[in-house]
Amino acid sequence: MNKILTIYLFNRKQNPNLIILSVISILLMLLRVKLTYNMYLLFLIWNLFLGYVPYFMSSQLKSTVPGTYKFYLLLIGWLLFIPNSFYLLTDFVHLHHHSDLQYIFDALLLTFFSIAGFYAGISSMLHIHGLLEMKYSSQKSKYVMITLCYLSSFGVYLGRILRFNSWDIVSNPIKLFSNILSSLQHFQTYEFVTLFGTFILIVYSISHLLSDNKTIKS
Image (cartoon, rainbow, N blue to C red; front, side):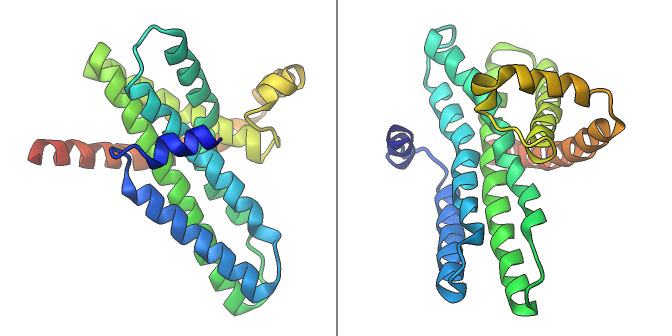
């Protein structure tokens, strides 16, 4: 973990917006703890860290020689962790109405955490898209990214609905794959994956378009 943070903080090419969003989110969390003496939502900080992990990995992939063991390990790790970035949006299920003021504050808090996670995930996907376009055609790269949006959505489904996490592929693989096969028989799975995956795709498509326009202007 320390190595990952060191790589991120001392790489000048990293996106400063990620630091700003994470600082604001954590400060809001600390303010909530101080005002309410309640640590209920403190887990969001850990979720945010997990949401940033794909960005750390994709940043390293950009400077790793393709075809090496390190490259493939980072790529597999990225695929396993990318759903964590978008998972933060589903943490709104923890928004409860204790009082009007606290409800508004918690909604603001969850919004910042969700934006930070989503921003990290989308930025990370832009890295991967760039790597794909270095080897494959623009059309093929686009199809891969569309697929990744829906695979990420399925990963969020596994986490939020089935309550699995990225580590379960190592610690509890039999139960994980058994539940995956079982979930494919339910309409709810396809409904969730389609709706949430389409949302990720729309946000990503807009971000990619803006990124391309920015590159052209530069």
